[in-house]
Image 1 (spheres, rainbow, N blue to C red):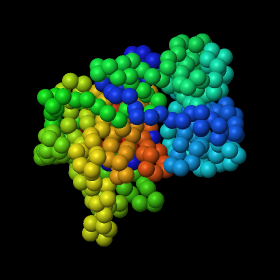
Image 2 (image 1 turned 45 degrees about the vertical axis):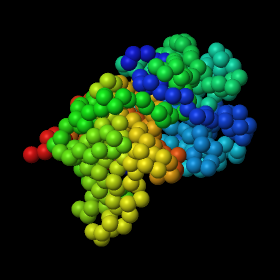
Image 3 (image 1 turned 180 degrees about the vertical axis):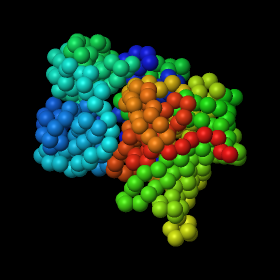
Length: 387
């Protein structure tokens, strides 16, 4: 799989039974290393970007480095500034096309102002601040660490009023274990009778013959990604899964082909990821199969590619193959707009995806009834049933 980053504002966990994460971040340790606050990091990031509005800021572990990651909206672009937590120096700076202008214009209260309000409401140290959109209404979510736990405070971005607050420890699951959304959900409990190799998730189709084609420029080359739901199925970890082929070409030459294995839960309509056979090509020859993994082998187990009900703030692992593939996603918006060669889409689902195995993160965008419409620099050019 390529790596690229409702009903209630307090829905910060997946609507599926989950188990408590084995361990959460050492926030005490992280905050001790940080020589300045998240609020100061936001100002540094904005100064480095030069202009715009801060829409996301987070104290995070990026590979082996502790950093502040600041996203600044600039009309139809997003500038991501990564800062060292000890001296404030810029570790990385990157700008990509992403239009958050409607969300920014809807705000009467900045994210920085909301952060100060949240700290007055709940004393502690801020570790994350984010602008969210629900039904066209902007809301700032500020997460504060105090007394050993993270509490998220929601602030109306128009009036500046506190809407609600909740610990990041969510409601208990069906098994009685508590769900913790501070990290990413990595265990999913689906009964063996629930699996199906065909079906339609709002954001991902497992209909044999369905095809998506995305194109764009990468490193000066024209890249084309073709995603095809195949007629074939494959049994993985005791489950009959649907084979989905991803074929990537650069200037007409095949550079990667992967056969991905998915199954849909008939109960929650989530699409689960059971593994892949990956082949990277050079001069027409396979040069590596290093990204291959299968649930049930070498400690790997299935992840969640796309929930049946997407909730703002939901974080989940898509691939769980230690040391090989650990892709994960966070739902960051549900009502975006996107223009592609295949048409204009509204109510677009946006996820932020990354992996703890390497640096870098990227946004992906999905349209209901269609599927993925943008993956990094690649945009949808056509979709439909194979003729």
